[in-house]
Image (cartoon, rainbow, N blue to C red):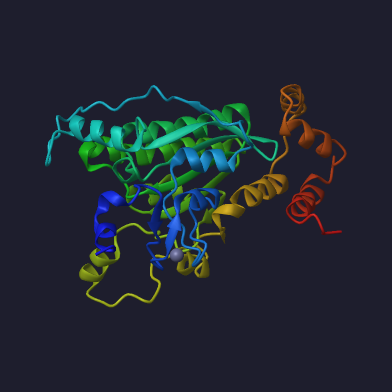
Length: 319
Ligand SMILES: [Zn+2]
């Protein structure tokens, strides 16, 4: 029978298409990538890698990775189903990453920023010493350079393979954010699906602005643990971004394709770069130059005019 040969997996080219996890529609990977891994049928936000997130959020070619040479040490000689170093090696080869976070600098619509994104593909985006260190360094760099910091979280929480050392990252990252706040810095936290455990209980929840992707699972313990501990039924939509928005825990739900515009608008409203920064980034050319020229006439009215300018940028037909 002619159809029988199509049943064999080897006749299907690998990686050409995937099924949406929510609506089960077949999606071509090429189209999915051009739509930032969002299902065109139901809007479900599928997994996006840290590098893809940072590259699509930052101005083209502006992202420069830092601290890519940080590697994890197995200080506890930890073994579960396999030795921890073996697990790290496998995760690295599967994800193409050296650890669960990618960090660096870039610009968003001309605004220089320090950025970090966790990647669920590397051990569930779990926070060990290196992930914690990259988040802390991103915040510290932003404080030092006086630029906004943006951290995109996508994580199952602290990494049990590093025991108390992973829990210490909660204190380390929170401390860096507290020092940034004392210095008058701006930190925007973006919660992707899922953001849970020690990550949600530390830096992910400490943003001056907290944005979340639609439908993202956000919480500390999972719903099953809570249900069994409290012995009660949980409300519909418990621990979703929408549930938390209604209760004032997050500021805004942003579709991934709108994230760049929304962050640029927030920076326009809340941040002013120094003259030295303007000169430095104007000299480097590119999108920063456009922004600096546009902003130079806005002295004294930065927030209001800058904000509507960004809105006009999104909608060229706006007056
Ligand atoms: Zn779908």
